[in-house]
Amino acid sequence: MKRIVVLFSGNGTNLENIAKKLPKDIKITKAITNNPDAYGIERAKRLGIEVEVIDHKKFSSREDFDKTLVNSIKAAKPHLVVLAGFMRILTPIFTGAVKNAINIHPSLLPCFKGSGAIKRSYESGMRVAGVTIHWVEEELDGGAIIEQECFKRGDESLEEFEEKIHALEYELYPRVIEKILKPKRARHPSKRG
Ligand code: GAR
Image (cartoon, rainbow, N blue to C red; front, side, top):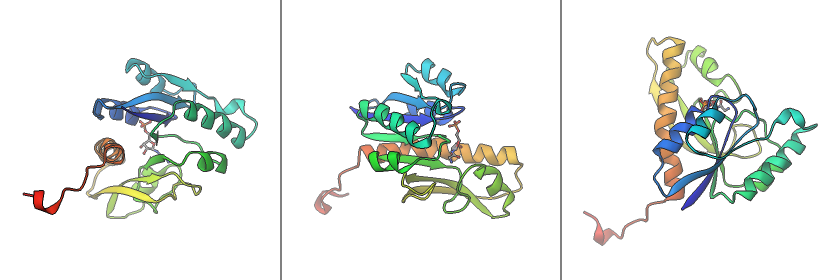
């Protein structure tokens, strides 16, 4: 069984979607949030997932928060750490200690890094939009890209645009997690067909 730790800050729809779509041999064994008011806490509880709240407001520095976060992650011994709407800027304390973390970002990186990406992408006038999954590295939203999905813009409203972005996220994130944790072995050419 492969263990995942999910980090989230808000609504938690990606957390719920991942929990529901992953195969039985990949489990979210812990979810961690920095926000005691995150609705995702309710979702996690409903799904029977252990949730830990590490309220960033109780720490005097980003580094102190990251130390506690790293300890909590390490205690769960995850095969993969999955950031799903985790709205904290991470320090080298985190990126130096956690090498197996991925993030989903609601734009076609390297465009629209940082917060408010959906609205900025919508208002940019670009004729394509999409989502990116990348490794978490020191630069915010700047780690190596693992996978992207995009769609061609129509004349959708911001709400419709957001729905399209989330639909791509819900399809892509579980698929990428499974691909990382259960890579398909290449078959010998003689066994093809
Ligand atoms: C998602 O759209 C995710 O891509 C975005 O936050 C949302 C979280 O929704 N993440 C970022 O913007 C990271 N920079 P959720 O809490 O319902 O999963």
